Length: 203
Length: 100
Image (cartoon, rainbow over the protein chains, first blue to last red):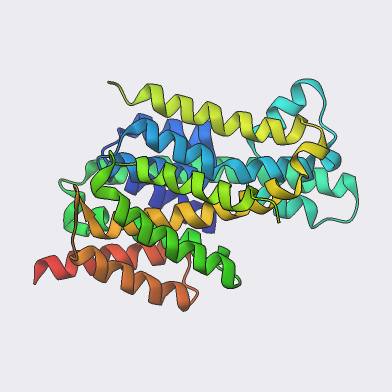
């Protein structure tokens, strides 16, 4: 149910950001990773370069690569099945799969969560997008002011400890400082490079 | 320029990252630096996205109804409200302020 509600808000915000219902549904079908989808529509909706939005979405999706690594041993997916399994690697399916005791239970948890979430996510997106599309002006409901709230809800669970909080504050400040000097959306990529550089320096 | 090209490229990139995680040898991704950087990327990017979507209009930094919406959303997050409620609280705040 939570996934359906999350998807409803994605559909609504995506159409408010100026995407068509078809583009919105394509994101949920083909990208299928929430934070990246919100980032893409966030950058596009703010008038930023869509390629900067695409890069931001990909960077936010890098954590799915680490999830994939943890799932590889559990899922043991070979051949075509691996190509199918890859599409559903997100926070929720990973969490469900690694919480199980035996590989067989893990695989069952992975695939059942994947199918249920994929259906709910896409259905919720479609309903949210269609409902918002039917509105004369989504601004009357304040929907154009909602992306910060969505990003905050995505960020909050990751703010455990001092380092993430410090990085979040620095990134927020820096993006506003850089903004007048760079094309819209590009400061986000500068920040990603800086995070990579600080993390990659030898200790 | 159509939005479809970057949109589909982003979808492809996100899929390739997932597939790479499932397929690459573990020692590449288990590298300590990658393990350290990757979880920090969403933190920095989401925080930056909050800042721009709240305070920026074109090239200017402004404080308007969106800042109040963020504040109310933050309270909702602290109260552990579900995602949809956080978003709805933010939207409703902006809508109300604009009516005033």
